[in-house]
Image (tube, rainbow, N blue to C red; front, top):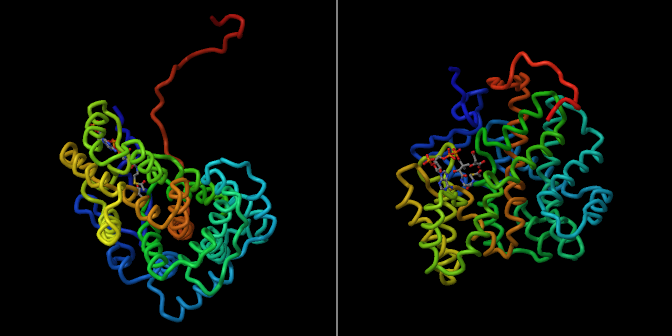
Length: 377
Ligand SMILES: CC(=O)SCCNC(=O)CCNC(=O)[C@H](O)C(C)(C)COP(=O)(O)OP(=O)(O)OC[C@H]1O[C@@H](n2cnc3c(N)ncnc32)[C@H](O)[C@@H]1OP(=O)(O)O
Ligand SMILES: O=C([O-])CC(=O)C(=O)O
């Protein structure tokens, strides 16, 4: 009997210098540097550049990249018209998938797949994802689109475009850290999807459009919104333990916990929990935070022995909702960060490309002949 790696678990299909994960010890590094240090000391701009070039930038290189991002924030009016024309009430991830696909139609270099073109398009995509997501939010809320500013950081400008108000330095920095934590994560489903698309020698916009679709699902990036739905369903902290126990008794999955690779705490969830806790200590524990605390305890007590612990999606929503962001935008914000990892991984894989084409064990019928439709019951 041939072994099948269901879900491709543990299958090694390429080499990468970008991200290392030790799932049993809960370790995550980018370019060998622990995620906690990136979160504490770096910026999303710096990590994005480090991933794109697979090396730590100099101050001069970072300044140049930052200037390029700022200069590329605006998107063509036709893209904004498409966003304005979208039906109201669509999920923002549907809207983002369509917007990024359309964005490709406005980029004269879109079809180029040379390393230089992939790199240049990546800079534009990283810069413009923020503009697309903020514009989707504004139009879906019936508000005017806010044009990007060049005097704010990537995180600060996004929050400004989203709300129309300049964020405080603390808010911008907190959001920057959230972006850092989500920027890359090895061969997760959406990065793998981007690479699979690029392996056919398709263009960057196709890679990223397919990655957005993969991130959207609740087993992947969509889990952060699903966690918020769960918190709303639980309602109050005193109901959390019974709610989770009943779900586990029914063999239902709890959103925001469990991971294909981490069989211990996801280090990103620890960082996010610390920030959520700081806000809770400063402003009083929010209802959401208290429910999450009880869910975490119940899950770890009941199924921690199976290696089920909170993942990155567990606490991110409380941080975003503290910043006044609606839950439908949690997954687009994940995409806002992961665009760097997607682009970097496509660039890296393209340097040594081979078409991705796995196989399946055939279990269907054999030796059959075509029968006329009228003869079939
Ligand atoms: C950014 C990210 O993508 S992080 C992941 C975000 N996704 C979520 O939070 C959704 C909830 N989590 C899950 O569905 C899963 O943990 C996944 C999809 C992330 C990983 O799943 P897999 O690696 O395929 O694990 P699998 O489904 O095989 O589960 C292994 C065991 O753990 C249990 N388990 C896994 N996740 C959960 C969960 N969230 N709640 C309850 N039990 C769980 C399974 O029921 C199974 O138990 P069993 O062996 O007794 O049958
Ligand atoms: O690595 C994974 O499978 C999912 C994940 O945590 C991520 O993409 O950030």
